[in-house]
Amino acid sequence: MNLRIAWRNLWRNRKRTLITVSLIALSVSLAVFMRSFQEGSYAKMIENAIGNFTGYVQVHQKDYWGDRSIDNGIDVSDSLINTILSTKDVEGVNLRLESFALASHNVSTKGALIMGIVPKAGDEMLNIKSKIIKGDYITDSDKSIIIGSKLANFLDIDVSDTLVLLGQGHWGQSAVGAYSVKGIVKMPIATLDRRIIFMPLSLAQEYYSFPDGVTSIVVRFSDSNETRSITKELNSKLDTTMYRAIAWQDMSPEMVQQIESDRISGIFMLGILYMIIAFGVFGTVLMMTEERKKEYAVMISIGMQKTKLITISFYETIIMNLFGVIVGVLIAIPLVVYFHYYPIVMTGQAAKSIEKLGIEPVMPTILSSQIILNQVFVIISISLVAFIYPLTAIFKLNVIKAMKR
Image (cartoon, rainbow, N blue to C red; front, side):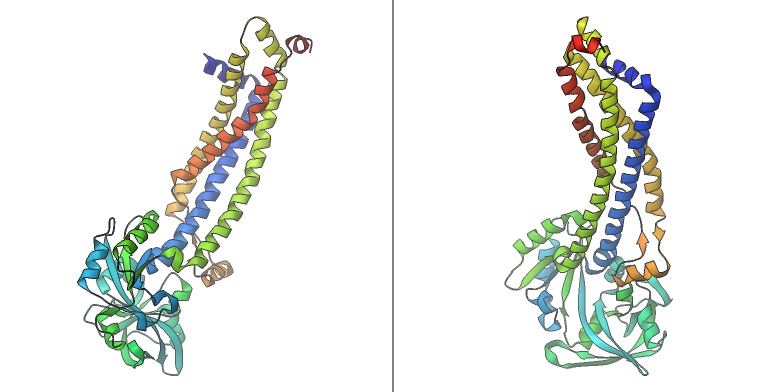
């Protein structure tokens, strides 16, 4: 009965109720859309730079990450791999041998990142095959390489041409080799596309004179939210006098800081938006209470308890705000779903600026129920704060004075 009365009371002044519901609906839909875009951009950034490249967790020799020298590589053993694979939720590992070298073709020379990978496992993680724009993918037995498209343009090199590499091998010996280019790959991150060279792990071990050696073991698992717990468990199992598991947050602290600072600015903008909602809701509740004080006084004088009036007023506030939230969410969901599958691809100068930061110029939304629940929580909180006024007004209502209005 109280709910029915509250519902009918809301529609006694249709225009005011519709204006308030529209304000809430518009704000909620905008908030959900903005947060989905913001968090989707973060997820894409992390996926490009972390999930699909460095991995969420890596295992190194304990001193490797400080200078990332090939001298601090790991001699891979079955017992080490089995220890990693025995960890809960770990699905597999990717072995890598990474170091730097000078890449030269004709008169052009540029520093490059050499990444030795197991071709099949490497493609499962990096999706290199799908990014090849010319030539073919490498195999385990190949003596050839794949290079980034921007690096290929700089060196003016094409498929089947020979690239000369000059670097420093394991324990300081010279590393020199000439390799045929089997394919050209376009990496989504421009900074990587300008310097990456992929070669089979066995070929990289031969080039750097480091048989059975790797610089990192990428730990594969499906849920990125388990990064910290898996890192902690790995470090409890590994011999930490020799090895160390590192989470991506510790490998890329600058990215964490960038995301956090941008997230704060987004939350600040949402705060302004919700201040507008709060004033709108409070204004409506204030008017509803003031114009009905005489009505409240009459009802109390004929025997209605103040607690029942408070309950009905509470229902009115909650119903109005929840109705606005539901409408706003129904408006936002189709937009969020559409831009999740068909993200905005930035072009021109804006795209170049973003690529310089090592980010793919793509802006998708993220499908997250948590974002919607957060908006519901905020609106309910605003409703509860706004309800303080009618609660106080009804409790302190002077029946005789109110009836003379």
